[in-house]
Length: 72
Ligand SMILES: [Zn+2]
Figure: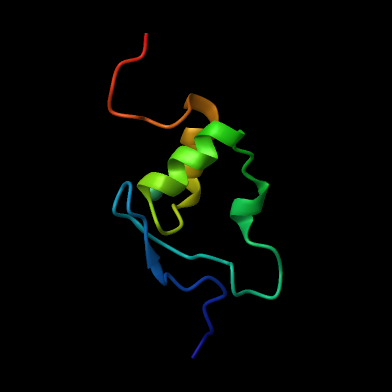
């Protein structure tokens, strides 16, 4: 048996991909390296009660959260 260092224990509510959340790991979760601005983070917490996968966090950090309404 080979222990998996990153078990897939969550499912991203945004894209549906399984991913590993490191919130209970000894080290810091990789998602702590993704920087989201205040409004994006607030909107994210309103929309999704759970963590998102790193890919989605990275997209949101770059593009801002998709609010479902065209603002521009
Ligand atoms: Zn995702």
